[in-house]
Length: 269
Image 1 (cartoon, rainbow, N blue to C red):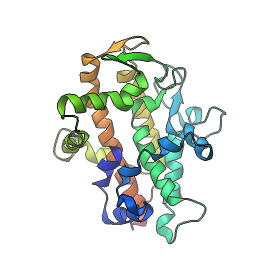
Image 2 (image 1 turned 60 degrees about the horizontal axis):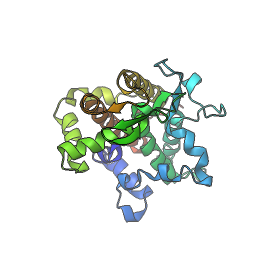
Image 3 (image 1 turned 120 degrees about the vertical axis):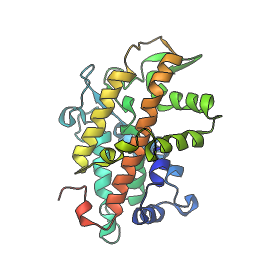
Image 4 (image 1 turned 120 degrees about the horizontal axis):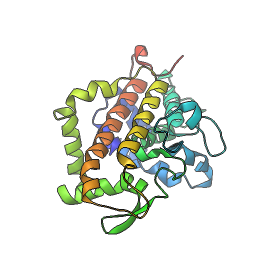
């Protein structure tokens, strides 16, 4: 959904670059391949990307510190979703300097960036270390088994689609777009897009997520609980807003990376 929202906000230069980088059969539709990084993370060739989908923060700290938190299980620095967004944004910045840099696979960089912008805005992707971002907090979502991470990844959106939109995700997405084009979030759009450099921006996005994970994700939840209407109704607006922010900010990054203006650079030189 993050990719679909971003797609509609792309300026002509970015739209053209995205179309050129994607396989012909998807007709420039970034969302058609948005799940690719999840599909390949367990393949041998791409196993190194698995830690790039999340950030583990100290339990109950409820804040993000890049130096402290952005590393893989072996302690390799920069191997987290915040580091990945910086890295792939940097790779894509070479695209407009002529032909693509052979050191980088620009298509993969685009797909990873798009996916990870969705991940960093999902609060439980910046969660506590001991429960792996809620993955080990087993519970029931209404009548079926789930876990807290999965609730924020899928369950809340699927329940909303079933209850309010006739199971049509596209209608739900149109509602999200309406909220920031001329609805309750329209006044926030400029602040969402603010970004002087990619490092400070990803730090902000991650800090927002862990703050929301503490305030809304983990709050009053323990293993074995059954989460239903109260949790769903109070958390749905948070999930929808984070999807909107992820899409708006992904479009901002792509428009600036692929745009003509040198003043718009997100990469420190």
